[in-house]
Length: 451
Image (tube, rainbow, N blue to C red; front, top):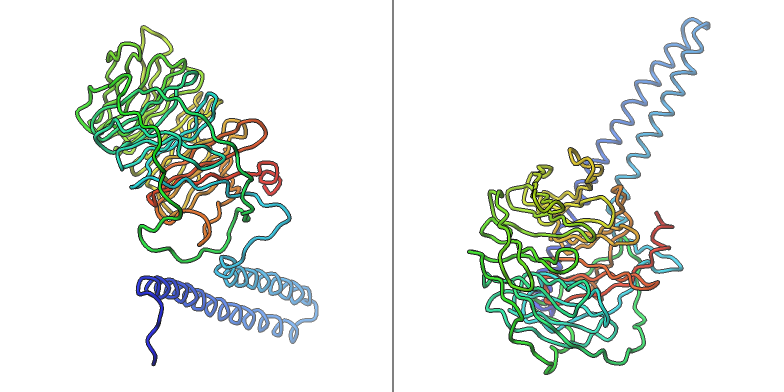
């Protein structure tokens, strides 16, 4: 037999995928055989009962009718189950078609030299995208053109998160160098380009083979302005600073660290105001409420904590134990909800007014990373370890899945999502270990209509 001319890595990937398909079909085949046997057995038994009735007392003819009706109902139910199980795997190969695409690829942002942990969109004009990477840098991008506008290179370790000031052109980054930095930026947007004609349905579309490890499309950013010195350096932690965020008003910031504590700082003086302790293991994320002085921190100890700074004289804390594994993130919505995601493959929606139990639980097939919730429509975007990005509403109903094929989508774990709902458009941004960020245009009216 002639040797295959396919590259070894591609051939190995194909063999692995075909092996998975074969195992799926084998399991379904066995399940279907058992269902067929069960149908035949029940049909024989119920038919036998009907014949016995027919040969006996004619006054019992009603029993025959009832038995035949029961047989028909049961047989139909089993056949429906059989059909559903048979089509289960086939449906994954079908591309959803429709006159309107629910998701359209906006732009790919390629230029980091290592995985991207976090991304965020500015809250002031000009609106730009910020990314935080393990390559020790943070980059600012033009959303429309995909051009890198500015590089921040002040950290000596992985940049784990990036958040923008609510009213000023300042960014807050957290790093593995045990510090958080506040730095100013000035950017000028390039002229916009025509949008790409690339669209795909936003649900169970085809999934093609992975590209070669480390392969990225396009060139890295050319020489761009670089900021190397922070306006303020926050350095009270004794471990990796994994996340940071601005409190409402932008006069204070909160940081979360692997030293099991969160710190509250004054921005103007860089002074440490409070150290928030209580978590038993490393923190994974922190988030602030958009309109109130509330902070939520998540941890590997399977809990997340709600810190209340609304009363200057009282700093209350509440502990929530709704997950069974690391809580990877917990975020506020514009209303009175908190949404938490976990490595236990669940996402839970909580009501701030009654946090004793979640009002909705979303169960998935993969660990969930840093989630985000759109401000206007309250749509939850879930980034997964298995490279998927799924969209749900606040009641836990699945709305869509972002395309993932050889032409678009992430090729490795998706780390974070962020929304931008400027004007009439609604954009979702995702980033991952494949060193790229991706912008998507989400057709919200069509998405909700599909629901």
